[in-house]
Image (cartoon, rainbow, N blue to C red; front, side, top):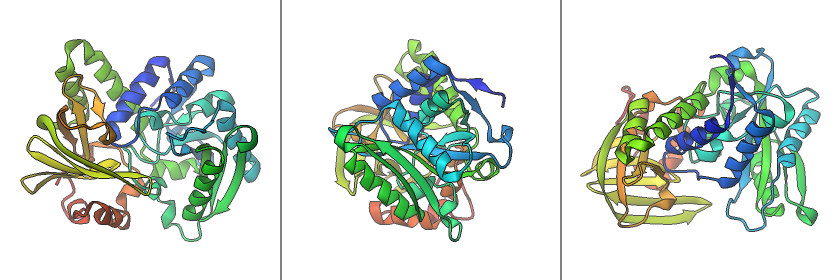
Length: 362
């Protein structure tokens, strides 16, 4: 790919396409959208492939950590910039680019404000090309490296709640310490984490997934004038997916466990489980799709994606599916051990559908 100067229309498209690729999880975060718009209006960053970087260039992952609904949260552009500056100080070298942890609404535009303020590119290789429930699924295989030490920097809060930390620890311990810092900061912190080389990102990241989200979003936006069905058709045509069912939400059960939304939903004649994102799709007990296949709900009246947290009984919903083979997935989607916890949470078999000899939509 060539360099792509990111624009305001790309922001809208990235968030819409990212919400579809979120697979039911994530959220349409207005603050994230505002930050990305500020980025393209002040010093529009460029989107480049990791192939355009030097092999040893340092790339870091940008993210927000904490509870989006926290009343005392406060994160401003300076906090995002500060995480990169502290990372550079810890490393003793410059950061050459930034990636996001996943596609998923505002998560798709993570890192754009840092790139704009610091004059570095956004790298088109997120940790995963779709949203995922556990952080380790978005660690681009680093959890499999023996003795890997994670470096994470975080900044957020104001006045007496201001927090700024640098953590060096195992992946899980570092993530726990950063999450604790988010609580002390009022609920949310900006984070830069896990510096790796561009060559590592090229090998283990979801290369091209940001472009996929942007182009998907543009296709959906162009079709809006032709009605809701056209929007769904545009998404499915672009991604190579299919309609599975259309009907009213007959039943939805959602509970919060450990900071995750867990539950089941019945729409028409299909049943789904979710753990933030949709995990399984079945009709009369027959498995039709299994995470990381992209299972998604769309508002039949608008054609726009609906998150699991947005479902209510009586809503008119269209259920769609995109085979995992059509997605751009990171290394975290290749480790069977990471899927066993999904089985325990949703009480459904997962691994046998994903890691059997025949890979594709179950």
